[in-house]
Image 1 (cartoon, rainbow, N blue to C red):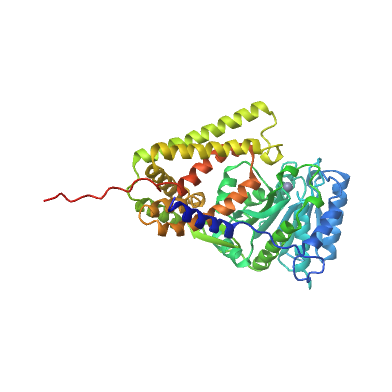
Image 2 (cartoon, protein in one colour):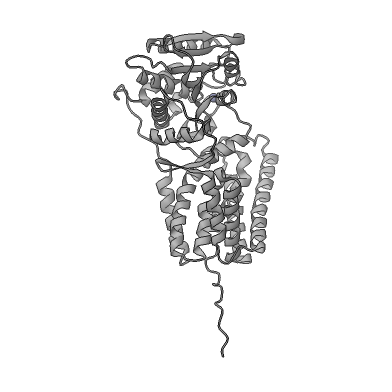
Length: 486
Ligand SMILES: [Zn+2]
């Protein structure tokens, strides 16, 4: 316990500092140059009184309201009608298609009024364009409101088929929830310049290369996917908290958190000001990045890889195959237990493949999943000894950083705790603090993004986390070599 407590405390302080916070929502009397959630929400309330699915009368009406609003700001609005869809394109008078495009979808699902999905995007974009067009509409500012997103990204597909080639940067806004911190979960294009622009914007939304890596592996799509395939650069935003109301009658303006709207709006306005009159320079390097409190750190992936190797090399005694094998077996056992638990849940509740947030009493599953993880970890330590836990934590974290740095950065500080602790418990406090900073937003984020398919992950996470905090402590120190008496 002697070194566990300070290490836990350092990690807790780091996590507290990094835990996502939302800004205060600005009222209607906010200066015109700034973004106001209250002004954006006034529009959202008017546009999402009832569902507006593709080809519905209400959708026609809302597209007209959107066109009127943008025309009143000085835009030239074109309603494109590819195959009975209604895309809305707005630009400055006489503008070419080069420049910055703010993108959202105007249709909703038939089941709900779509205040967040994607009234959020419509409201934020019209409030941002208002703030940018106080004198006149900037020459390189464009708006694209697509139709048929909910019907398979059809509006975006139709738009890119007919659009002339141009140098474009898109900011797409969508939602699969209506509260919590905003996530900028995809960067497309020259990432160094786009991440520099992101850091300079002062945006406090969550941005991690982990989310991007995971999203790239998933089949989920937004309009941004279509634009990205056509060579556009840019940023993709979403709200993911409150997923139980996603695509339901509960997606109303009353449930849309004004603070989340403010956070998206502040970011989009700041990024728009950054990119209105310039383009990101070409760059093919790869970066790991994550949010820590109100800041985003960005490191080239080679740095993460080098740190991974350094951590593995630092552990004393050296990682042994036996430790790594036992640790991997424990993690695997927790994973299998999680998969079995998920199978059991699907057998008991046929509709279980929905997001966990949509399942009544999801805690009944989350708690046992976590329990399995914690118990396996404690049993592992008791049975195999702390040194082996350390060996596994270091080898796994170090290798993850080397092999998949854009996601493996998350395990690196925890692995460093185990490696540094093997030499000096005091110095392990710094990596523990960094681990807290790295893990805080992650734990806050998976709560928002949980789906039932993540139950196996929930069973493994405690093995990883408890492993680095409660690893080698308490095991007997390697016995010093006693010189033979002569
Ligand atoms: Zn949507």
